[in-house]
Image (cartoon, rainbow, N blue to C red; front, top):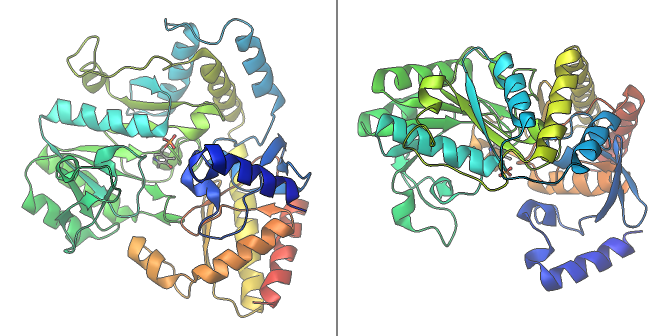
Length: 427
Ligand SMILES: *Cc1c(COP(=O)(O)O)cnc(C)c1O
């Protein structure tokens, strides 16, 4: 039933390290062969063996309208016919910028890049350039892409400068990165006591890279306060939560305003797009008008802009989509919780708009070490494996979240809950 995927994986491993271009795709934490995907069809993925899966990953977030949405597809095809890239300005960039800037009252200007990694990397350079400070503060368990200074882990103490979490990153490159525990106000205050050279805090306001772990209101308020008091900029990394948690991302559901916001995923609708945005004052310090350098050959690519523009226009024209996505996300996780309870399986669930999370744990984790220590990873692996066999495609790690799309129906959600019930009976 997975023969073609097994063969495809073997072939891929001969010419691509680990057979994949992004490590999570290799299914290391759950085991088994990752299905090789032939195509998407609305709510479904279809693999090279013809197996169909209800897709709760959606390319890790971008595909809020599911696969092959006709409007987005048509916009892309029309744009493709006019050329793939110009390396010169096109009006599509302005149009997408207008859509994004219109949605937020604290940003005036946006610059496009080609990935979330580039967005956060550029936002950090901007923050350093604007403040003239060197250090950056990030939180354990938040992911902001794979650039050198962000690939850090906490040292032995609580408030520490990070040490590289990957070979290939010189310790010199991470010595300006301070790592703090997520949702730990005391630890955060200590970091500012220890250093008066912090250019920015970068945070996922709704963390989605250690499972779904929202920052508490008090914690975000403290981030804002400390930034104000110390001449530090607050970067909200909304690469995942932007246009996902609500029409205005995490900003729409929390009370804290960022100085710089980073975007990716949904704003490209499946094409490679990232962006960072701020006030005119800050953004005009970028080249060409300012001295802070940042560039990209394919940045603002017209085909990618057309996809993102169509997607955002559809979302903006139908804001009720978000209520519906949230309702369906809740229906799904509450259903999973119900069958888990019935089968005596400890499960914690939560949602933020179309992002949903579930942990096989007795208690809801609030930071990275709690996720690592409280969750039953064997159980998750078994659940994941059996769900794949039944045609439900969840993210292949408990450190990831799930995504609801507009094309998933109530009936499909019911079927998913029933399948989970069958599996948990045998836990
Ligand atoms: C996915 C993600 C990134 C990195 O984006 P890429 O496009 O994979 O480089 C950065 N920050 C957050 C919060 C993300 O979820």
